Length: 313
Image (cartoon, rainbow, N blue to C red; front, side, top):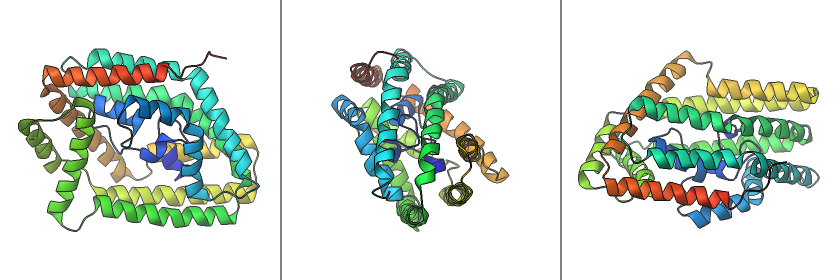
């Protein structure tokens, strides 16, 4: 939902090309960084460059799938997306490329769980301004929403929740484990290249003992969706000024980042710490050749984004 959109790094909350491809947790600081930037559908430098260069149009298709904007409202939304991407390219992309460059330097060295978690925070901090800008842009779009768009959003939530159940909540426990392992291996191999049998077993053991709880995740996701719908309906019906709309959306994001549910907050802490440990284990088990592969990927992504830079304004 809108609250979920705000969690997405590059094009955030109006929201982004790459936001449709979000990942629940950073598995390794390299995997996490790459996926935050690329998403599971992007596998090469040219794909990243193409996606970002066409980010506004791709974002429009994705966002319209959630809201089904009216013909009268569509031009405003499209213009907001164009403006967001131009702003991001001219003011934020340099920071993203610098982050990739720093990761490329780090990737050849061993890491600790604490370092993995620090990278996760560093990534979040890098994209905070993009979220703030997206909130302001989306606040301008909200007054044009109507009952039809909010009903469409509600129906779309039902669909994405069904998709999540199919992907993460298989009734057969063994199948659920296999699918989780498959996703994690694919993400790791996208960065490091092919994992050997010992490395795959390490990941499998980590998945088997992970505190990841898809039922709890789904329940929290549904809470966020209800919160998003309630917030948007209130903003549409009460029609407050822009500052009030931005404040309401910012509060919504804060409730997404820090759930009102104490059980879920404790779970998030536990899962993050576990994933940082597993990430460090996997990275430290990679060979010099695999780390060099990761470094080359990061350098390629960095160069690809640098080719898109425009002068700051």
